[in-house]
Image (cartoon, rainbow over all chains, first blue to last red; front, side, top):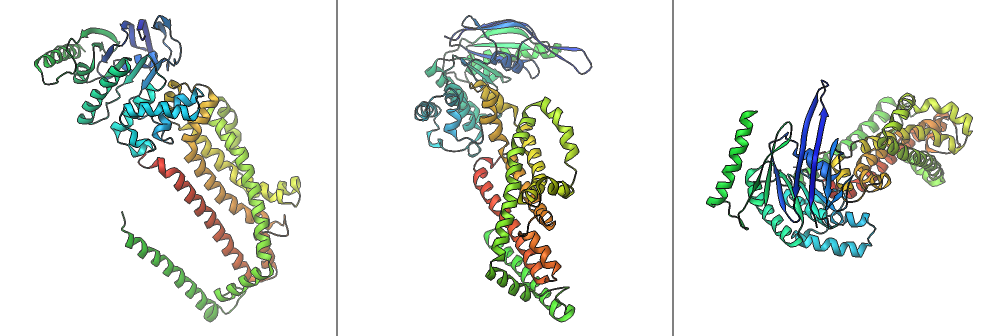
Length: 253
Length: 261
């Protein structure tokens, strides 16, 4: 299972001049089990804030988050996260990075290498088992980060613009690989992006946020069958719809 | 990047400079100064060196100095690293201890010599104490800074993977992330400690030791011997640093290459 419910989430920061900056304003939505949801919005709309709250890295000022009906407080082993920047531990080899969570759980060395090896296979990086992150390309590093987040078998995977720093080709490749991985592992995925193309390619649903204060602007269903063809007419149609909405919003701002 | 023949050429250039310096020194000493008390010739120094090696004083002094050095650096590591870790990890402890450390730090290590002698007597511990004072601050400060600059994303990534206890975060994340900075601190500390060694020994805390022998030789006006000990001290300092750097590079280059910070 992996059903996520966000109820009435509020978050604001104190500005330097003493005024209150509302980042998230009574945000509520649900993500169904095994669903791939993209949260789309321009920078500063509170996407990352939202994800950090779900991850338990920050505490919400008001509102609650439920995973499979259970309220979440703090970090939860059922939730995995892939960060935007490179978050691999540079002093650990690829396999030791992937096995880190298992090591923390106290799983013996052989067993954790066996499990980590499977996830290394899943992201097609077996030849780089004993490499250090500095020896890998950006795309490979994010693949390792995905494998590392999956080893503890979380039901919910949070991804904060994980492919944002990659070149277009690598990005497209990793998007496809991630969908394959979701197909195999059946995770619920909440994926943050500011790329409309990425959101339409990946998601079952797209949640568009308005900036300052972050509110849900609209939720799109993406009814296209997978694998999706970026050049198809239907794809372009959904894309245009989403883009139009975002453009309308930014002209109001 | 330099090509390899360029590196070789530069090495020969460096050796050439040393040879020229030795020749100029020899000529100056023999033909111009003509007074071995003011400027002993390199050949005199070589003869003196062989003499010290022969009668075993050099080895004895070396052993004694290394003991002083080990006491000082060992104590500095034992106290400096935990202190730096605690201050780097805990902001309140940092606020508590920082002013005290900043007050003590500018006192030159040699100014502690009177109290070193009063507290520890004329023993190896007293010389060790002066070296400790010189070595402990670079270790504290580099460890502290290493811990302060652990990228937040490493800590958060670890938390998401079930590493949530402070003790585990220090052991598995902060310490390895800070290690290059800690080791750089130890390297600085060993250099400062080595300089303090000679000064501490000059004050007669021991009858042996490279520094005390150097002072003794000066007092009996055996200046070629003084030069021998100067050179030995310099070469040993260089050797420590080189060995240290070799191991650092071998260990860290594996994962630090390509990192910007």
